[in-house]
Length: 372
Image 1 (cartoon, rainbow, N blue to C red):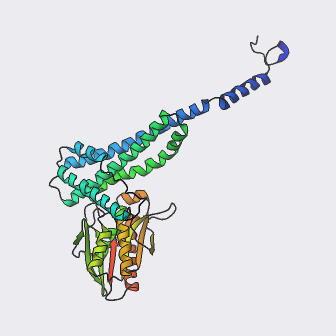
Image 2: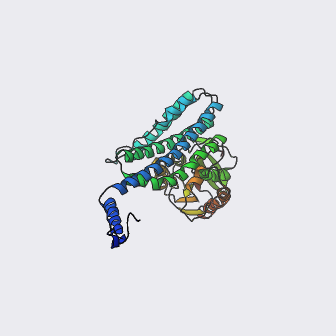
Image 3: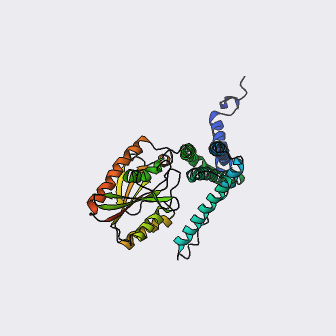
């Protein structure tokens, strides 16, 4: 005997009625309640929490690497050093509503922050060389950057969870896989900095080294040196960050001081730097253009541009293309092979666009870790 006949023969409910009831039940639940949003909220909340744990793992891994390095240097209070850096040494942008001297103000703040950071490090890490101190500073900066990214992501996760904002959580859910892949190389980059291995961003200094060879390095500004060589009658002044420690120096100020030293009699200025490639482009591709190839907040770049204008000198840019991860990881084979091509390109610019007796400034922009 059927308890729920599917036909009207016995006075029961037929199949069409059941389907109609189910349809209206689903319709009401889906369109007239917040059940779908609740379901999506739960799904995205769990997904974001899982991915956020991966980011936290990367942060802890980077901090542990820095701690291990400090311990090897004989620093007993490594935890205090790391904790003192993670949340400090931020720079507040200067007032931009009044643009007068904004570059000078920004430069003052950046330089002041860097000086304060390194002086504090010297107090915490006494008795180490300048190169080692720079390596410690860069590794701490990487760990601090990862920690900041984690805090921002955690903030939006907790905000979305607090207000049950499934749209915000959905955005994080979709964004986090890409972010995790981009953050992993930063953790690996710390190993390269400790070992003094050139990274992708070291291509500029590497080309400068290939030009200068073992010629004397003369200090021109903080963590910045230059060499003077002669290329078929041209006086070539090569500026780069002072290696082999991990530092980018102050190439803009170096170029400016050399130009002043030459009474602004400069025929050409050439900058060489790494540049981000687009997806689909080949790593190590060389490109040439005009302008200052340097990625800084502004002060160093504008120094080079102002010098070029004052000297009336053409400003050439030679870039080596690479991905974000390749720029911070130990230098790959493709990037290393591109150094000679960039060197030949710079050499060609000097020989074909200047004449004997000219003064030429070449600036190898980038991190000089592992590069003399």
